[in-house]
Amino acid sequence: MSRRVLCLPMLLALAGCGAAPAADVSPVTASASPAQLLSAVPSELAAEPCRVVDARADVRCTPGVVNPNVTQDTIHTTICAPGWTETVRPPVSYTAALKLRQMRDFAEPGSPLSYKEDHLVPLSIGGAPSDPHNLFPQPAAKATEKEELEDHLHQAICSGQMTLTAAQATMRHNWTH
Image (cartoon, rainbow, N blue to C red):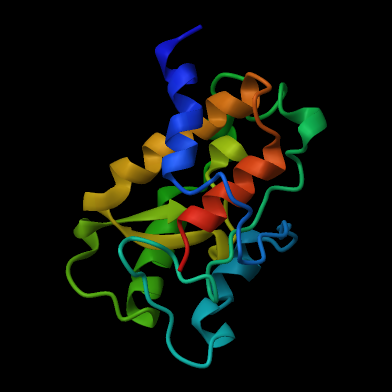
């Protein structure tokens, strides 16, 4: 067994995954087309403008949305299949335009080069590829921390140590405010 897999329980415990999430982490499923999604304005969902705080998404505008084609029954032909995420990743033209709009809507300071348009529920654990309610402008300096948890959750799903929905709930719980 690899050292990474042995470290997973410790990492999840340190990330606060031992307790049930306090927030509503029910799956939200994507259903609109990318064109419809780009015209949506997530900050209109909230009474006050949404904010990214400590690189964590504002749950009011970025609750995290799952891909309806990824289920526990399909993980071996979707997220656990090598190269699958590249087949669903949205084009840079879409994410770049969305990042600029969200930075404006969320009043994020600085250059767009300092941000990465990131999936709250990552593609590698069944996140919706193009839904703006699953994407947010994350400060690039904090991206590595989130990516490490993404990698561990993906490995846990594909090895049978964690269910898909538990991993998605963990990500929502740990990366929203």
